[in-house]
Each structure stands twice: as structure tokens, then as C-alpha cells.
Amino acid sequence: MGLFNFFKKNNEVPASLFYDTEVHCHILPGIDDGSPDVATSVELVRQMQAMGIRRIIATSHVTESTFENTPDTIGAAYDSLRAALDKEGIDVAIHTSAEYRMDEYFLKQLNNNTLLPYPENYLLIENSFFQPFWEIKELIFDLQLKGYTPILAHPERYMYYHKTPQIYKELHDQGCLFQVNFLSLAGYYYPEVKAMALRLLEKGMVDFVGSDIHNFKHTEFMKEYLKTKEYRKLAEKASAVINNNKIVF
Ligand SMILES: [Fe+2]
Image (cartoon, rainbow, N blue to C red):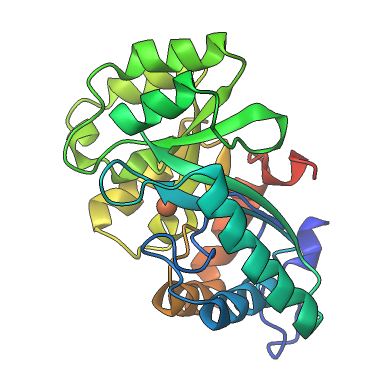
């Protein structure tokens, strides 16, 4: 998609997202804190399509104690959504993966070879919002040894890293890719989170932008942000560096 297609002069045509492959969202029904049911999922997908999304990597939470999802639970949720989308004639490609919290449950699935990566073996991992995984560098190394390319989800949202920002460079230099949230760049969370997202972009450490959509509050916020002048500037900068559309499926 050419840069000039993002912005039509005609104000009635809303701007599209600067990526058409979504790499982070919680649209599978009923298996995490995202969409609660199939009808909601269908409507979320519709709204993502309206913003320009054509391919979706669904990344439901996999978290010890709270969301202990497996390829089976994820597959079943996908099947019910796919059937509903087909019935509605909604043409969108969906790849099932997950957002893996680094914890004991994850290590177990890693050992059992039951992880669901993106295409090309990218793997979306996240820290808790309270503290980093205690051995994150060792884990990244292990994942790479096993043939995965780890992508750290929303590094800008881990406020404990803001005090020691050199950790970002260390992890990124190690080969861990970064996925920043569109919602962070748009200012949905704390101002410090937006500032860090922009700083990572300036420093060349944003590899992917993902929406992290859980609900309609998120899609509404995104739609409003797409109308702003600030979005246009962001789109020019970010579209030049991200790799979303290079993931093929
Ligand atoms: Fe997420």
C-alpha cells in the first residue's frame, strides 16, 4: 500500500491504519479478557477491517492460573469465530497464535513443544505489569536456540523499565524484537507510556505495531485517533520501519 493511500483528501473517507497485518489482538471469543462471545468477535473484526486490517494474527493470553490456554482451547475458539465470519461473508485471514506471559506455565509449554507461534516462528511474549520475568535474557536466548524469534509485546508499558531504559537496548541488541501498541502511540494509556513508545520509535527499536484490541473502547479510541493530524505524522514515520506487512500467511 502506498503512503498516499492512507489519507484521502475527502474528509468523508477516514484514514486507514498504516499496517494491514494485525499482529496483536484479543478477538477470539471467550478464552481471555478480550472478546466474551462470538457476536462481539465478529463486530470487532468488522471494525478492524474498516480501519484497513486484512490479515489478523489472533494472540489470546496464555497466562498461568488465569488463562491457561492450549492449542486446543485456542483452536476451538478460532473454529467458532471462523464459522461465524464465513456465515457473514467476512473475508479476512486469521492465523492463531498467542501472547505468552513469561511464567512457569509458559516454560512447561515450551518444553512440551506445544507453543503456537506466528508464521515464520515469531513468538509474542510478555512480562507481567508488576515485575519483569526474572531471567528474561536467558529465556530469550533459549527461545532463539529453539528456532523462535521472540517479540516482546508492548515494552513501553512496563513502567519498571522506564527507570533503567538501557534494558531496552540490551534486549533489542540481543535479537528480541519489539511490538509497540498502537494504543500507546495514540495516548490511550499513561502519558509516560506514550512518551516511551515514541522514544523507542525514535531509537529504531519498533519492529511491529499492534493494536492489542480487547474491546470496543479500544476500537473507538483508535478510530478517533485516525482522524487526527498527529496520526498522519506518526503514520509517515512508523510505516517506514515496521515489519507487520512482511509476515506472510
Ligand atoms: Fe495483549
